[in-house]
Image (cartoon, rainbow, N blue to C red):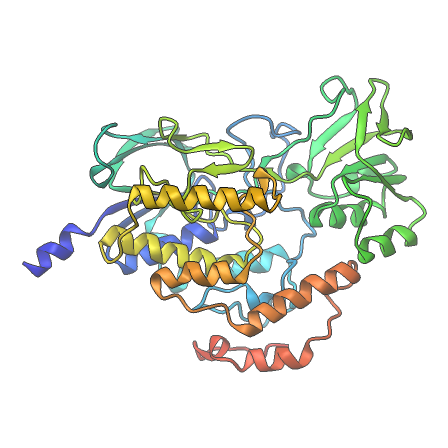
Amino acid sequence: MVSETVQSQSKNVCVIGAGPSGLVAARELRKEAHRVVVLEQNHDVGGQWLYEANVEEEEPLGRKPFLKVHSSIYESLRLTSPREIMGFSDFPFLVKKGRDMRRFPSHTELLLYLKDFCEYFALREVIRFNTRVDRVGMLDYGVCSSDLKWIVRSIDKNSEKVVEEVFDAVVVATGHYSQPRLPSIQGMDTWKRKQMHSHIYRTPEPFNNEIVVVVGNSLSGQDISIELVEVAKEVHMSSRSLNISEGLSKVICKHANFHLHPQIESLQEDGRVTFVDGSSILADSILYCTGYSYAFPFLDTKGMVVVDDDRVGPLYEHTFPPSLAPSLSFIGIPRKIIGFPFFESQAIWIAQLLSGKKVLPSWEEMMKSIKEFYHSREAAGIPKHCTHEIANFEYCDKYGDNVGFPHTEEWRKELCLSAIINADVNLETYRDLWDDHDLLQQVLQSPHFTQLGLQDSPL
């Protein structure tokens, strides 16, 4: 009788995406004895971290719902967080001889870490590569959420064969750094010169000797500008706020061809870019470093989950749509968090809900919680498009409490904050010069780093 009960709680689960959140979801679902299939549109694991050099086929502003290119990583990209804080709880991001041993390594090193994770937990056997999910919908719309099944239609990119399968549950782990978020600027549609979103920026060479306008001063906007200023004739950064960090200010002062402007007022057909302060320049290219939107073009929930100004909702704890959970869940939506451990705690909760070990609150309680959350954000003056920006260690700990996930270690918080502070002041050097050596030595002796017994010499 006991075995039958356990058997009834083993579900057929489809995970969409084999990036960090999809991989850890697969690992946790298997721990709970679920049968897992991961559908991945690319030829390998990594998601965003699987660098794609060829962006020729992508529409420069990425305005199509199904993008040809998933990764937005540029060639020179290095991590903005130190490697010590990046790893999953039971699989530290160790330094390996013969690889990129820097504390803030290149994107390639993080891809290799994800491949190591995949091999260590034998996840490759459940992943179907080169498979694009075309549609996910409810099998019998109208049944109670506990009996809900999902029909998933996918296309093999090589053979173009279409497959439809039924699953007990779907975990959406498709990331949120692919679909460009674009500003609305007068004249944008009729401007004749080169415009592109940083989603398809790879190297600075195509901008050689050009006058380039970079819209947005996010971390990627700053990184890309620092790279462009070496090859472009002029770089003009347009920013919502002229109240910039000390680090960016130092870089601008250092380069005679790097200029800061307020927001763009309009674009003229002859190539003129006019700013809200009345100043203008003739530009060759505009590069929009304006961030990304959430997009799930394959998902049909009959309007039960919508994306409205970058708020995916309604979602209980950024993970569960109350009307469809736990058979439909989202992993990896929150931003401004220490990602991998948080994704891991999401994955554990999803897996245990599906196996019956855990139960969600009632629909009414979940909706009440969501409404209170929205209200608190509005009261704090936080715009809707920042709904999923957490920037709060306590929230992550409280989330983990749902499944007894360990709280964020003090050292992880300290290293995270010291990197943010250092980047703010020393934008060009923070990845290679830091002052937390003593803390780092303690960290590397902590159980997190010694647990696998296979640590290489760290630094």
